[in-house]
Image (cartoon, rainbow, N blue to C red; front, side):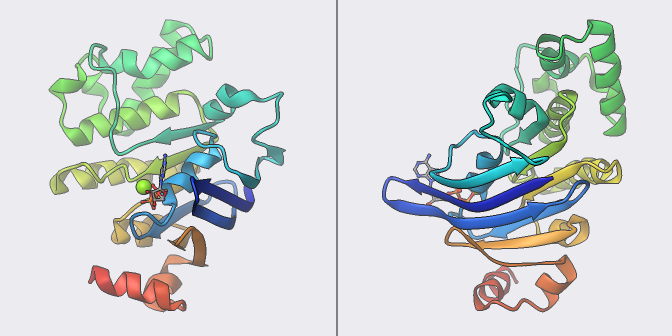
Amino acid sequence: MIEIRALTKYFGSSLVLDRVDLDVARHEVVCLIGASGSGKSTLLRCINRLIEPDWGEIRIDGRTVTDPGWGRTGLQQRVGIVFQSYNLFPHMRVIDNITLAPRKVLRQSRAQAEEQALETLALFGMERFARAYPEQLSGGQQQRVALARALAGQPEVLLLDEVTAALDPELVGEVMEAIRSLKARGLTMVIVTHEMGFARDLADRVCFLDGGRIVEEAAPAQLFNAPEHPRTRQFLERLL
Ligand code: ADP
Ligand code: MG
């Protein structure tokens, strides 16, 4: 579903992504781990063109992301992203936050958009908050709304960048549970996380980034129990 070849990105003179190759199959969940500054967010953002790489190629469904017939907006509709800061519109109710894009971009009727939004909220145990404003919700609830909003565009791929990093520890679990339910539904996801337990549990494959390269990738049991690359070992040992 996603094919990344020789992806290279500089910020000024610093090489941030160094010829990264990565394939993600349909329905697969791939977790990206690595130290701060290793290039995880940059890699994720290149996939839906929030960042333009300097070199290399990214194809989604066999079609290059820079295909002019597709356009950046079309791409970003098919490849959704959620960040650490949930960025909900504070003056809009939960339901309106979620239905805005489907109504404006997908031209759905209000009734249709709301029906879908309520379905997603129900999946996350959040339907009773449809009429609430973001400030009335906990961080974990707001992040689940942000997930629901990303899903409302009916993306084929969802990118998650440290979505639990800003949450109080007791709220992390409910957001992970929401992500787990998306995996159960077969959504293709690329997830940057520093929660190793979550990666071990959820990922089909884990990629360890170091200095802008994927230095090791393997099934979670393999990567966490028997890392092969010294840099991976060092990274995991520091977390203990
Ligand atoms: P990670 O998500 O793994 O912490 P990032 O992809 O955010 O890493 O960053 C990789 C490197 O690129 C870091 O050294 C960071 O400082 C640098 N960087 C990221 N974004 C920018 C930017 N917009 N301008 C300049 N440097 C950046
Ligand atoms: Mg990051």
